[in-house]
Image 1 (tube, rainbow, N blue to C red):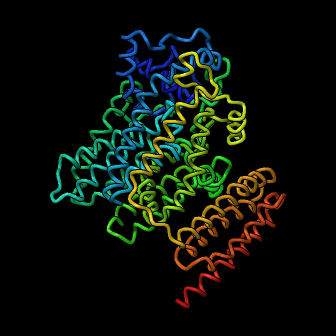
Image 2 (image 1 turned 180 degrees about the vertical axis):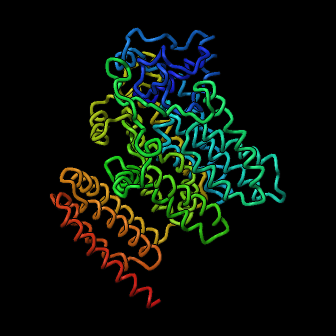
Amino acid sequence: MGCNQTAHLGLVKALSDRTPRIDAYAAETCDTAYIDMHYYAAKAPGLALATTPWYGALRLAGLAVDRAPRASSWPEGMLELPRRATWQVSVFGATLAALLLLLLVRSAAARIVPGYGAASAVLLGIGSLVLPFSTLFFAHVLAATLGFAAFWLLLRDRRSADSSRPVVVAAGVLAGLAIVAEFPLGIVAIALAAYGGLERLAPYAVGAVVGVLPLAAFNTWAFGSPLDLSYENAVIEPGSSGHDVVGANDEGLFGLTLPSLRSAGELLASDKGLLVLTPLAAAGVGGLIALLRGTARREATLALGVSAAFLLYNSSYYLPFGGWVPGPRFLIAALPFVALGIAAALRAAPLTTAVLAAPSVLSMVGATLAEPLAEPGSGVGLWLDRWRGASFTSTLVTEAGGGNGWSAATPVLVLLVAALGLAAWSLPSVVLTRRDLVLALVAFGTWVVLAHAAPDLLELDRAVDQVTGLAAVVALLAVAVLAWLAAARVGPAAAAGVLLLALLLAPGVSSHSKWALLVVLASGAIVGLSLTRMAART
């Protein structure tokens, strides 16, 4: 189950015991803080605060897994927990939040790109990190839901005839609550203050202050000060004492230092990078750029700004991926904003969007059913092995005694396919164009090259302590953008130079970073020259 889930669960159980301290449950997690001889969950308290009433109901019904661990230390205490211990709370704290998020995305996207809201919401829910994290007791989906709900209210207010002060205040409250669930949602809160404009700033700020009051109250209760946080004195190594080594977030400001280009490259293009596992995100960014030329340019600017800010923040963190994960989990809060661009991409280039959605859906469904929490250095290979061995994560079929084979996975797959079918059915009539076909070929081809070569190049850099591979990956991303632009704006001839990137698929080429960089630069030069010449002619 991992320390993140059990840390949140430990706090839920502690709150049910009317204490902010998880002393009784510290052996179940390694995500702890040791302060004044007591243990606390090294997490923002929002997810636990929201889930505690649900957990109380489970206790009253006699269903909750609420006993203290028999083992006195981690990981033995965590291994005692049955799978249903986190599942029964994630159903409320993550799955329900994910469903609400998809409804919000459907509504917002439909306002910006009429007719495409449902499809963009389904693709977000099935082809992004929202899917695996809707099954895990992490705070990311709940925080993303609260942050996007604040945007949804402001969007409605901005597009109504008269501004409503209560609606703006409510948006501020939701933005504040998002921070209580996950501290980095302050990025969204600040961005929404700018989006709302000066005329809404005062009521929005009042609401935001009200929204963060639960955090101040919890900190005062737990630590005696509203400004103290549970990330202080976070444990690095529990050891035999439970707090052998502390100071996990001591570097910089709670683990944040200067942004790292290498970390950004890893977040986007490593074996668990966002663009490698879910290229649908690239279509969403392209759609947002297209929206800059229309009436939704303010919303597109907000979404692009939030996405860039989260990438910048995440690349500044000392642990960019945050442990055993199916992808860059700290970027999840930006994904519903990217989904607005998915709606625009579906309208402008449906075939291209579908081509990029296919591997995204396959990877996220594959990870979710094969158990998404994979250790660093493993991921797609581990998930494929589990699929080949028909060894899936637990589902309701498993709980009913049906095992972890195909019988457990099939009902989930049927429902996911049904969702995709309904999403396709909801779309307006689709007209395929020659330009869309060319763009789809270029987009899919550059993704295949990126997924094959970039992880090797970044891993080679790590092994030999160089930057040539990173330079090749950055250049490859730039050439991909240039080729997409050429295919979309000018035509296939302008993007023909991208064919040179096929050399990176040859055995051994991506293991030689200097040759790979040379190939990418040559391809970029050809595409850039063709694009310049053809643009001059037109």
